[in-house]
Amino acid sequence: MRIVAGDFRGRPIAAPKTNGTRPTSDRARETVFNILSHAEWAPPLAGARVIDLFAGSGALGLEAISRGADFALFVEMGLAARAALLENISVYGISEKAQFQRRDIMRLGAMSDDIEGPFDIAFIDPPYFKQLVPRSLAGLKAGGWLKAEALCVVETGADEAPELSGWTVRDTRKSGAAKFWFLSQA
Image 1 (cartoon, rainbow, N blue to C red):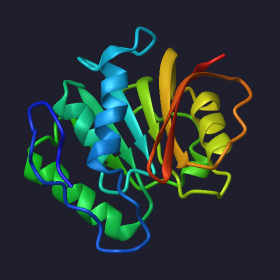
Image 2 (image 1 turned 90 degrees about the vertical axis):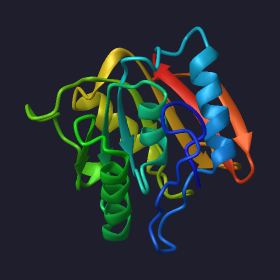
Image 3 (image 1 turned 90 degrees about the horizontal axis):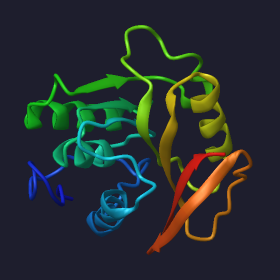
Image 4 (image 1 turned 60 degrees about the vertical axis):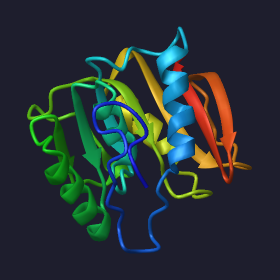
């Protein structure tokens, strides 16, 4: 796995040494970021503040920083993923642009004062077929984590159809076993 474009283009991404994570492929990230870069409804990446839930290796947030985002908050519970993510932040030398929180995403609560937010873009990549998307979206909204015009990029299984009431689907794309949903608040 490598960063696809931007300042860190071609640099490797350390991934957790466990079967508990499923990193977003280079090709899928390229598709996602091409859409984010060209869709008129997407907030600009340059200067964006992003949150990466179920971050795993942090590939989505790292790609966003590589392409001009000002800040990424990585939220992850897994210990192996945490080790890989912290290694990536260190190797890339982006500790001033990145923050890690080990936090239960299903219990996000209100955004704390030590986090500068709200966020322009949220990446949500939970385990497939566990019905975690609606609860993740509700937690972000209820806790004040998102700007009113924020975009959520959700990765699900290709055949998964999460409950998305209260959200406007801007676009969807399939990439192998994954499907990406681009959502804004309704």
